[in-house]
Length: 255
Image (tube, rainbow, N blue to C red):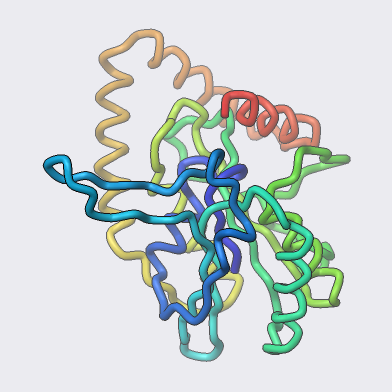
């Protein structure tokens, strides 16, 4: 499973899932080979003017043993360079380890109200890997790729089946959106057929829902927007590739 911070991680949906699942770290990447520190800078903490902690951007692989299968979770910060090399090495590793399927997770900013259940858009290396009930983009979808997708594409080239689950995140929520992470875990549970830990995501989602309801009620402009989004969503219009591309590009322009 791949969950990277960066593009296609609106609401920190994917990385919240990785943090919630946890697991034992089994490997990490050499950051000097993946990151431009002028773009993705390490974080330095000061306490009372004294340097205390320096944290470098990273990508790590963790192992989570489940009832009937093992789950490997690749998570961290989207790299600045060497995407091809990283994808090739992960593809070789997946084959060597006998990986049976690769799953990508993410969040997509969308014209979607927080008052409706989070919806999941699915992709796959072959439509046969997904049930007909899953919502998929219709027609051609062409967008600037995220690293998570390039890695998935390269792993799929080895013959390992791949799928992707992406939560629709309200475009007006500019912070972590626990409801999206919870929806991704629930969809992942159905896909792999095992129960997964959800930590305190449900409690966090409920608290945030109350806060968003309160803010919406106190601001007529926001309430009007939410009402319009509800009407649009309730019309149950199918998602097209063009619409999805437009929403993603609108989000990326704001980064």
